[in-house]
Image (cartoon, rainbow, N blue to C red; front, side):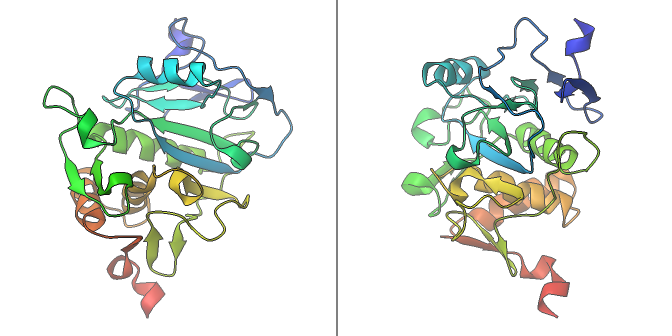
Amino acid sequence: MTEATDTLIVAGADAAAPAGLRVRNFRDLGVTRFAGRDRSGRVVNEVILHETVTRSVASTVKVLLKRKLGVQLIVGPDGEVTQHGDLAHDRLAHAGGHNGPSVGIEVVNPYYPKYASAKLPWKRIIDAPWAHQRRYVVPTPEQAEATTQLVQLLTSGNLDGLSIPRAWRGITGTRLAMSRIPDGEQRVPGIYAHTYFHHADGAWLALYAWLRLEAGMPECIAYEEAIHRATGVRRHVDLADLMPQAVA
């Protein structure tokens, strides 16, 4: 079905996906639409970045269905995006008190080294005191870039039904949080890693997206820079050298 390819459904209407981003929406019979509640007319002003502790889109969908949870978007290992709910109208259960005003992006990632193997597409593991169990499987380059393209689109102001500002909730001064933030439970518009208020996921993806969208780094440089800056730190990544206006 051509209408299910390379478009995102927002407030019942089709919106073109960014050039080069592969998308299948829930009009495709192979894409599950998660059950949720109608939030038509409500403000949607947050985006939450998640990671799955699974190794495929199919297993992710199976786990979410079993737990009666759901997200609007899933990013597969190769960077393909599947859309499982209307970005504006479908309220899905993925982020506790943030469910009402948020779009959830779930990135398929084993997360823990014990679930990774040489046969899988995830090739980088880092020492990460900020992560649960202190070691972290890094998302693939394709996943990191697809997530960033989604964040850029969702915060562009160009999608009717969404009003998500490009405000990085984990930034304080010149540091980006890699774990909890003091007011993470509060509903404040912007971009969240799930770990800002629950679990331990999403922070590395927020870092990569910030390096791409705010520091303007090319994909390959941003990927290596995000790995470098996230390795060995406990709670924050220092971005002072990339934010000269903040330290002048």
